Length: 196
Image 1 (cartoon, rainbow, N blue to C red):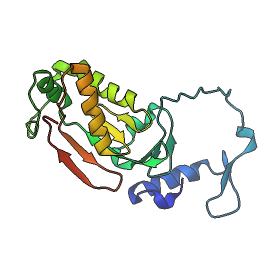
Image 2 (image 1 turned 120 degrees about the horizontal axis):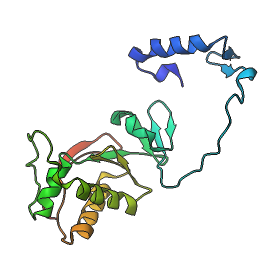
Image 3 (image 1 turned 30 degrees about the vertical axis):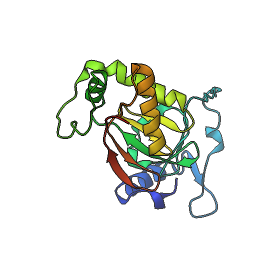
Image 4 (image 1 turned 90 degrees about the vertical axis):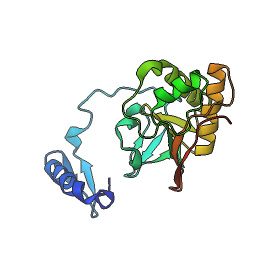
């Protein structure tokens, strides 16, 4: 980790942590940022072979960290920059349970979710089923992030995948979720739900 890329508020703390380990655990090497683990600290724990799962996405953060398990849900959304080696954006479904309820009732969500407070948790499993189906069908280009957000390489493709998954699960075509999106270039906006 290069301290030059760390926000000013965190730089002092990380520098203090690094300096704490120098001497006992780390030793300085050549160069300005050179450190290595002292030999007595090698193999102090039993190494376990981790099995790689092709279902887990490869997420890269703005600090250069690469996460290949499901631990990326703790990373703030604005710090995630790449999905499976490509820059990514996201789509966020505001108030997904209420929108799912409207879709199951045959109503178009449009922008009715704006200004609503709280969540209606009556169709949680149905929303999860729709979201998971869209991601499962497009595993290399979509990844779940928390409950209401999908990381994607292209927001238009992610919205279309969500629409296809919705029609396959509820058996009725033409129902779209209203989403907020941000593409890989930083352009953002929102789409209207309703008929395709």
